[in-house]
Length: 312
Image 1: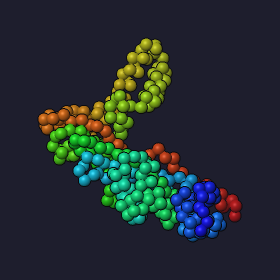
Image 2 (image 1 turned 90 degrees about the vertical axis):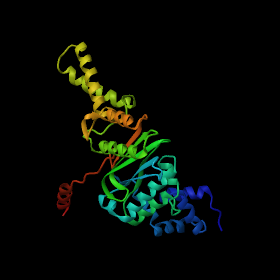
Image 3 (image 1 turned 180 degrees about the vertical axis):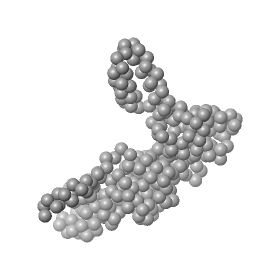
Image 4 (image 1 turned 60 degrees about the horizontal axis):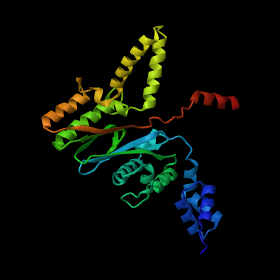
C-alpha cells in the first residue's frame, strides 16, 4: 500500500475542498491514487458538499439543552440555506445531537465540530454528509454555554419547530443557594422577557455594555442634539441624560419586566431574594435569534424573469 503522506492529503484537500480526514480516508481507500481518490469523493457526494460552502446560510434552527441537574445550559445555531430544511427531521435531529455534544464540551464551535456525537460520529462529518445528502450549504455557526455552581440555568424556546429546536432561544443563569424550583421558574420568566421584550437587552449591566456600542449611540445622540442649535454646554448635559435613558432601555437588569412593567428585572431579583431569604444574582444570559447578523441574499424574481425574457 502506498504511503499516505501529509503532503498528499493536503494536495487532495486543495483539489477537492473536502476536509482533511475525508481526504486521508479517500487516499487510503484508493492506495494513494489522486484521480481515483477524487472520483471516490465525488461518489460519496463530498466534493459536491465542499462546492456549496460559499453559499449564504442564514436559515436553519437554534437547538438548546439543559443538563440533568439543571446547572448547565447550551444553545447552538445550525444554519442552512432555506427554511424548508429546518423542517427536515434529519436536520432537526442533528441540531439536537449537537446541543447534547455542546453540554459535554467546554469550548467553542471548533471544539464542538471536532467532537463526537452519542452515535460516535464526528460533528463536522455529520454536517458534511448532510450537505451532500440534502443539497444545501450548512454550518454550525455559533454556540453558548452557561453554568452555575449553585442555583439554576433556565431555558426558553420561542417559535418552536420541534423538541429542543426553535427559531429563538434564551438561557438565563441564576446563582443562589435558594429553592431550585423557584429559581428555575423565575429564570424562565426572565428568559421569556429577554425573548419577548421590544428592545432585546444588549448586556446584563451597564458596565457590561460594549464600549463601541456606547460610543456609537453617544455620537448619534450628539449629532442629533447639535442640530438643535443649543450651546455645547447644554448639549453635553442633554447627552448625559439621554445616554442614561438609553442604557436603562438596553441593560437587562434596568428593563421593566414584561410581565409586570411597574417592576424592573433588578427589582424582581431583589423580591425573589427576599422571599427565599438568601441572595440571588443573575450571573448571565444568552439570546440566540436565528440568522441575526447574517447577510441574507434577496432574490429579485421580477428582474430575473425580465432578464430571461430579454434573452429569449
